[in-house]
Amino acid sequence: MEGDETMMNEFNENIHRLRKEKESLAYRNIRLYNVRRKISKTLTNIFFMGLVIGLSFVILYPFLKLFPLVFNRLNEIGRPNAVWIPQYPSVKSFQIAYYLLTSIDKLIILKSLLYALVIALIQTFVSAMAGYSLARVNFKGKGIIFAIVILTFIVPPQATLISQYLRFKDFDIFGIFKAITGDKLDLINKPITLYLLAIFGFGVKQSLFIFIFRQFFVSIPHELEEAAVIDGCGFYRTYFRVMLPNAIPAILTVLVFAFVWNYGDTYYTYYFHPKGPYLSIVLNRTFQENQFDFVKSLAWYRFDVMTFTTFSFDAVKQAALLIFLAPLLVLYFIIQKRFVENFEAAGIVG
Image (cartoon, rainbow, N blue to C red; front, side, top):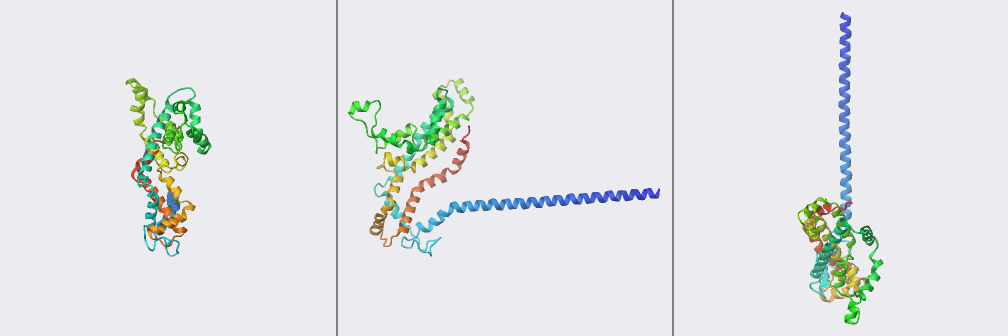
């Protein structure tokens, strides 16, 4: 009996020892897992932090280099002792740039903003109707028309420039104008040309705007239209009272894009209305390489800048670009949060 008890005690002790070793091994494995997890998480955070810092530096580097260029004295630009911080701060480059941009028309910035806003409103209105028709209205050839819209987006505008230019150079509608006036209308270098392009769906990136509206209206449930029909709404009332209010995210997204792209457009404005009051055209013409002597003479006679080099010319050009971008930057900071939300809500889905 005593031998059996001794064997049982040894057996129990062995089991207890094995359990403790097993628990100790499991505890060590858990600790090792937690340590590995912390190390992996730390390395991942370091990697993404380095990636964000690197991308931020790539984005901010041009602006960091721009600061000592535009806020330095024009005769001090290019010297190695002013790399990041201007040694002699000055806003002379902004004064020269502003004078060059507004010398012909003092209200050119306001007129450019107003033009971009009007064109953006026209494009948004027309694109919304076209997108709704392609999304909701069933008619023959709808697929072909949508394919043409996509093709218009893919084909560069240079491919249709000659035909558009000739059409507006000798503009007529079924010979009506020629019958009345004896000759066709020449709409080149007239502002109505740009408005006609927007009205008929050929404005800046307008095929993209139609595509955005089409995809947005496709995602809206049909029950909304059915409920509107039950309540006695016709086609147009359903569109204006039900569908458009629900398309606010897409409307704001397209409106912002249209405003920004038309404000900075130099292609359509240059070919169809080159003498118009557009800041982008004036900026492009004023700071071409062959204008260096003119800008140099202006800086000398009007702003008392005795030393004017190519670095000075670049500084004035960059200051003019900042003046040009200032309204867009103000707009961005005002609508940043709302714009991101609306862009996500108007996501291009199919």
